[in-house]
Length: 529
Image (tube, rainbow, N blue to C red; front, side, top):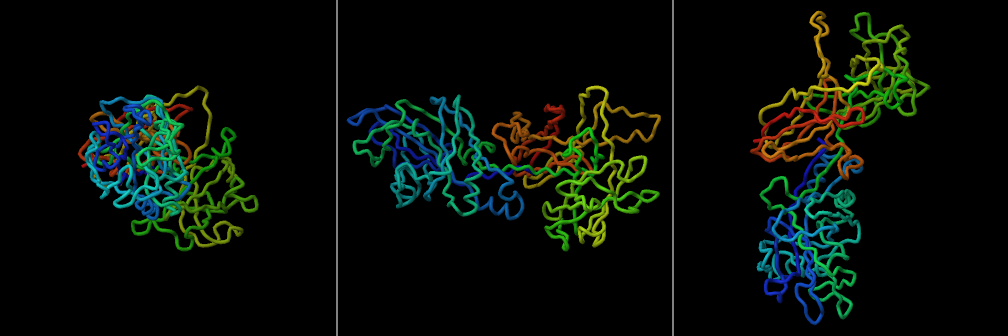
């Protein structure tokens, strides 16, 4: 599961816009209960002795970073550096003018504020009277903003550019979220507003802000009216403002996809990674003698009937990381997460000294002196591997696949965490009825396979393909919907709390093969209750 969403727990709009009489400003109004927030700049709706009037609104959001911290402690999301956090806000359609070609600034608020209970976004009639709820002047009951219109940190500052105007907002704010969780910056939420060059021009006679207006001689003498985003009170489940954690949760266990080294592939592609899952009474647990430290693996050929390891450990390909030239019978493996260990190495088909490549290998996991003979120490587990030899083709192959979720149910509870098992085979597979052995279909491993989730009623993508080619996707977040695989085939985990109950959903897959993304034709449907 490479995705988790955290919905805002407070949001509102603050403004110094005129009420309908174009005389009184709504600086005391609160909109904390509205189902949308609003960002705009209006220039010249009225004029007076100080020139044309400026009117502004800004949106405020606050998110439950304590919950994110708890999830990190519990291992639900990864540690710093292995996860990215995106601010997602969703466009709310409306009947008013929509600005184009503008930029919104996302800044961290530096002062505590209250959401409030106001609702009126037209006449600005829900006044706080300096009571509960923030407005243009007051951050909270009895406490004014240090600067009218809100107090914000100078850094970090993020921007989002809008061309047509109706786009959603999705911005990587990882640095700020990490600061919040580390406690180096207090979490007072975010402010969304137009850049200073696009907020309205106003020149104060004193060169400073007035009690209602911001001195801004670099501002725009045109209007940007009006951009609206859905707030947390919206009826649309998937339009709620959120911080979305994304990370690459892929586990690539090559035990069922193991290849001998070949001059046809690069050094990296010749590496195989195998996993050890230490399950005790149904739960993954660390091996006491290993903990989170190093574990060693040695490879053996089999006995005459291939039922157990025999002889000396096989010679592995020495590299700069896991297998030393001084003792190339030992792989230094490592800790991944609770109860899960891995080891990566390359092995040539000639390693056994036999004429034909071995068809079965035995991996022995142990702990002892890495410089001693292979396997000398405490042995924890012996596994089996069926390696294959890489070969090239005489024709350019364009693969086609048949895909199936083997454990799909009709419905799931909205609090479940579900592991979907995915079976893939060559669509052109044609069993030979004259050879019984050939009727067994190989479960193919597509190393770069991705899923998406769509709502069946309207085909809206509620979780899009996280393929690394998605706009803005970089680093650890770029492959957040990539499938894992092990000896039993491909799989992915899905947290059903991401989905709204009472609806049917579909799962689609795309495979990255030969430099192209190939979306598979099948759609697998289920319902969340």
